Length: 87
Image (cartoon, rainbow, N blue to C red; front, side, top):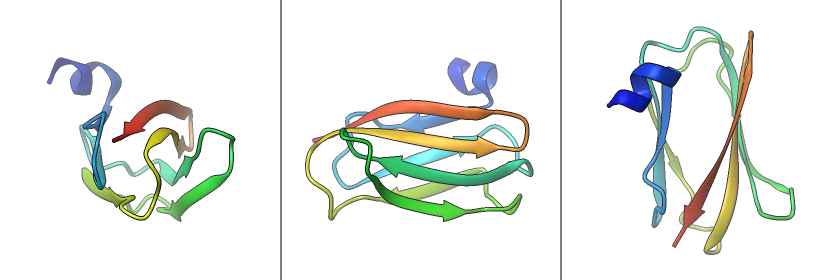
């Protein structure tokens, strides 16, 4: 997809039901960590990759309530923040 090529990453689908995917154009050797925050800013999920991420990583949030969440990807050279909706 065009967005994946332009940004180097894609977080989809939004809205999602139980899981969403973090997809990187190339193996994310600079990806340090990923975290998900709820609408009030509480971290509800996180993991450290320390450069060992995959091009496609599935995040299971089936135990969370519906609503808006913030996904934060921390790379060595940048931080990406994106909203995602759970139905």
